[in-house]
Amino acid sequence: MDREFLKTFTEDIAPQMAYMGIPMTEAEMVRNYMEGSDKYVEYLEGRDDDAYFVDVPDKASEPKRFMKMRDRALQSKYGRRFADQYIQNKLLGQGGTGSVFEKPGDPSRVLKVQRLTEDPMYEEPEVGIQPKFVVDKEIDIQARAGEAGLSPRLHSVESYPIPKRKYHQGYPNPSKQDEIMNIMEMDRVSTVEDEGGFDDIISRKVKNFGFDIMKDYPYKGTQEQKNEFIDRKSQITRSENAKKALALSKLHLGLADQGVIHTDLGYGGERPDHLVYDPYSNKMQAIDFNQVQTFKHSNNLHKHTRNQNLLSEELQEYSPKAQAMHFLDHKSKSIFNGMMAVGQTEEAHLYNDLYKEIRAKGDLIATEDLVNQGQEIINKHTMKDVDNFHLKFLKKRK
Image 1 (cartoon, rainbow, N blue to C red):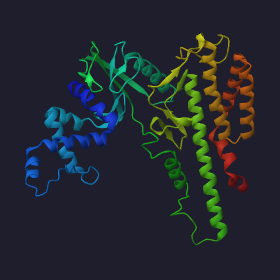
Image 2 (tube, rainbow, N blue to C red; image 1 turned 60 degrees about the vertical axis):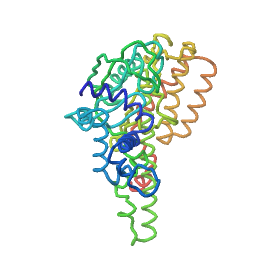
Image 3 (cartoon, rainbow, N blue to C red; image 1 turned 180 degrees about the vertical axis):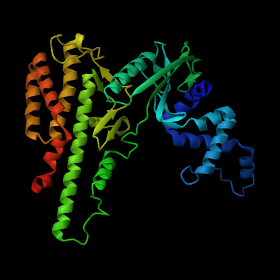
Image 4 (cartoon, rainbow, N blue to C red; image 1 turned 90 degrees about the vertical axis):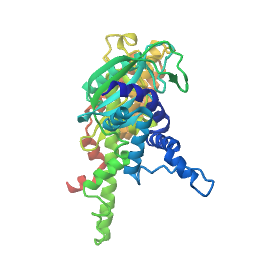
């Protein structure tokens, strides 16, 4: 991608999009352009009333007119070359700390673009800029998770020096150091949010299985046939939701095996814009490892323990033992959820009670052994186990 384009985009436009979103930022560009155009001023002067408004075309209902005005706005402010680059480089998403573009010439991959700094005044990620050490960790985790099939595969990383931004959050940039442009190339995926959410994903699969209420419902059938349709549809829906829960449990435990706890997956660990889910293979992946906790085995548990991923979290206020317990708490929660998904309700609660009892005694090794046993149980469970529990009508057939 054109370096001058990325320099200008990440300095001037990306931060606005992080706050306002892509559609509103583009609409604001058009509004500002129209307000400053000579033709629009003449139009306003020719009006009989005193109203002053900018009739910004709606992107949804007037896409061609909107795009034409947006491109004019970009060219007017940044020049023809920048406007052409903006059109050519398809922007897929904008977060607080990075922009995601479709890779030119290869729609199966994306480029995640970020501005980095080594200035010690930046200790945490901020809109428009990230500490280099944070992204270095993200790259390492992304690479390991990708190799394990737990995230999109990372193919390459490019970085080069760029001048520092003139402004930071609306004020003159206090940093004395130049910055770094960082570009990660990875596989393109469609997130759960892109697919409409977990409910929509599961609903589409259930319909594809012959349970579309509009097409497949036996409207002219007997009451018994109608009841059977509704009952089976309900069983399949519960089973698919349970498969999703088991897949999520396996994902969290898989990341834990890499020494990683993803802390940016929201309440319940199901943040739709940071997860990828295939309902047919029941494969779950995570993306965006900017906010994670990592652990190193040697700083916490004895080397002879079986949990070789156990590790020292970057929680400086925690003692090594507390760090390990914190890590085990996360794993234990995933084990409980996995057991519930396959219908082991009683076993799940027994496990949870036993975990709390052993943990309360402060016996780290015994706690870890219990978690290892629980994870072995989850690792052995398959999606067939979920179907066997939830699909009662299959048992009736036999």
